[in-house]
Image (cartoon, rainbow, N blue to C red; front, side):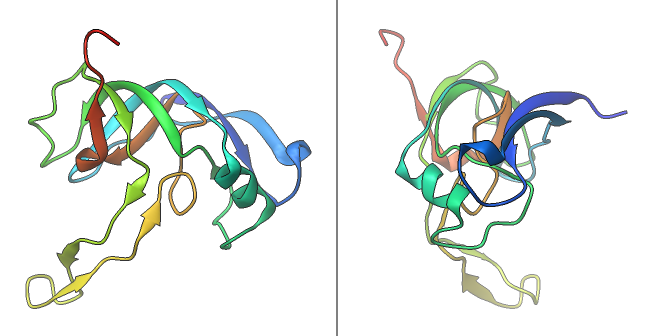
Length: 142
């Protein structure tokens, strides 16, 4: 049985009444990703828009939360240089980058711009998975 975490998610668009706190599987980091043990997350206007169904249709159920800070808890393949225990803030912008296209090595195409918590699952949970390149280290004095 997969380990579980608590998450604030919604399965339909609407106001605050559509948000429920429930148990979901703890996500595992994929290639180039890290798992963050969330220590802080804040709600902003983007989270309200996503919950209301704007500006895009979001796959359901959805965990919002684009503003996240926490501690690196696990790393996926290709992210091994990120130390476990590193305190981080997450840049929510998954910017344009090149990825291996459908030909798996034969062609490259630009990936679409995405925002963590809008296009992907976000940080309103005990853990979240994000690209390692989106981490900003929190200095010791903070």
